Each structure stands twice: as structure tokens, then as C-alpha cells.
Length: 332
Ligand code: XMP
Image 1 (tube, rainbow, N blue to C red):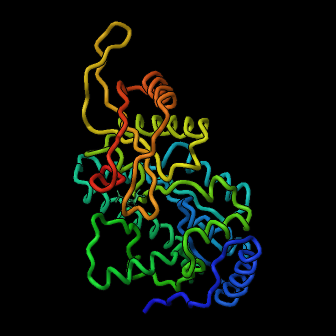
Image 2: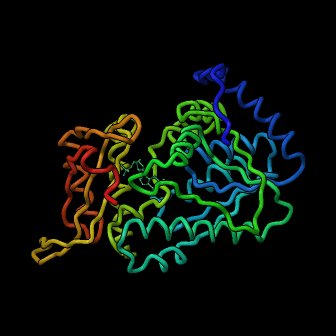
Image 3: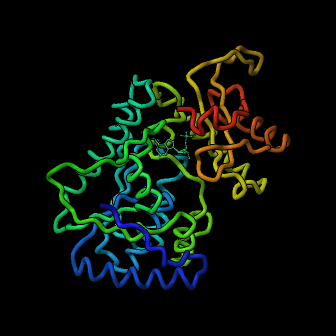
């Protein structure tokens, strides 16, 4: 039975409240783990990053972070995790580049749910392989937050999900850890306040959500390395131009999707077949419904000009106007 949030628990809205929470968690974690080691899968998302920063403060290098690059990260994302945690916070960080393992398994797989399952299962395999190499690790830290607890209660009651969003299933039988879940009673907005109080950069703490299967569900159908590369480059341009236009903090989620179709174009007086880059930019409160953000045409023109000029293989840029429902936020 999951622990429920007590009604008396004050909402963490200020740095003072966040600091009190952090101090209490530091005491609790130290009492729980003593001088033993704790393992954490550090994706670089808000929740796992806040857990990492909190545990580094509590137990320093007794925390072993494993960052698995599944080859479906956004441009420079894994490098950013290394810069922030290894270089900046002196984290005990193991970086695993598992790109080939993931992309080889995904080759030829077009079904979105099969892709999700392969990515989720292989993530566990890679993480478990790393965990087995380590000695004296008794604990597993997780960035579970309160909505995850509420969602599992709902699922236990038999309510059906549209997509299988929950990426991290259980670890194999031979790996038995006690859980450390310092954020499990917090809502997302509180996690962000705690993250800032821990000194994590604002842009990191307020970054847009990024699905566990990463670019894997945005490189539609069977993933190929060349189309994935084009998607990653186009997505980086979109994010850069949203930053330049001051839209980054105002739009909930924005990204590029590249379908497995080609159209005819013309470049340097020659026929130029390429994929379209589809821009998706939505606002939502809870991701259950979403509306379309109206991006100024000048920004769209700039993005179109840059993507078609700078990204090999993309010859058109489209703008998705579909709200949720009827379209889900991701295309797969
Ligand atoms: P949809 O596409 O269902 O997305 O409207 C709602 C929110 O969930 C994210 N999403 C996922 N997150 N694993 C995740 O961790 C997934 O497989 C997954 N699929 C969608 C999506 O980015 C949006 O924020």
C-alpha cells in the first residue's frame, strides 16, 4: 500500500519551505542508508536530477549515478548531464553509451508500443548490467513523485491508459534493493522549487517534459540512424529558436517529429527528396488535454529556413495545429 500525502503537509512554494524539506530529507536519507551505497538511474529529467542533487548533498559519493544514453536523447543532452553532475557537483557518475544496443534492437520495428517496450526493457537490461558490476550497493533511489503514486493506485484499480507511459518496470529478481524515494510525496511544482533551492539551474528545473523513449517516439515508424540524426538536428534548431524568441518558458512542450515519408523538393536546381520536419508546440495543464500554442509566423519562417538549410535530408517544415483530443501530444 503506497503512502498517501498527509493533508497537513504544507505545499512547498518558497525557498524557505524547500530548504526545510531538504534538511529533513538529508536527515532521513542518512539515517536510512548509513555508510552504504545508493544507486540512481540519472536520466537528466527534472525528477531524477533533483533526487541526484539532494542525495549528493546528503551522502556525496556514496550515491552512484548511472546515466544511460539510449541513443534517443536530444542533441547535447547526455553531455549536459555529465557537465552538470560530474564536473559541477562531483557526482560519482557512470556514463553508459548504449546507442548501438538500442538502435540495433529497434531496427525494422515500426509499431509504437513495440518500440516503447523494447526501449523500456533494454533500459532495464543496461541498467541491471551496470548494477551487477558494482559492489556494496544496497539501495536504489528513484525520482518517484506523488502523481506517479496516484497513477499507480488508479492503474491498480483497473483504469486503462492510452499509451504505456511508465517506462521503468521492475528490475530482475537477482537485484534486490531497498528503495529511497525522497520526492514521493511531492507534486511537480514542489519538485522544481526544491531543485532550485538545491542550486540546480533554472533552465534545467523548468525544462519541458521529455518522454522516456525519447526521440524514439518522434522518429516515426522504424527508426533509421540517418532520419534520427536529421530529427535531432532539427529539434535542436527548433529549441534554439524558441529560446531566441523568448518562447521557451511559455510553451509547455515543443519538439520536432519526423515521419517516414519523403516528398520531392528542389535544391541547387536538382531534384531533392527529403523528409518533412513537423513542429508540435502545445500548452496543457496535465497532459490529458492540450491546446496549440500560436507561434508567430516570423518565428516559424526562421525555423523553416534554418532547418531546410542546415539539416541534411529535410526538405519541408510543417506546423501541427491539432489539439488533444483528437491528436495526442506525441505522434506515437
Ligand atoms: P500523449 O502523447 O499521450 O503525451 O498525449 C502526454 C505526455 O506524456 C509524454 N509521453 C511519454 N512520457 N514515456 C514517457 O515518459 C512515454 O512513453 C510517453 N509517451 C508520451 C508526452 O511527451 C507528453 O508530455
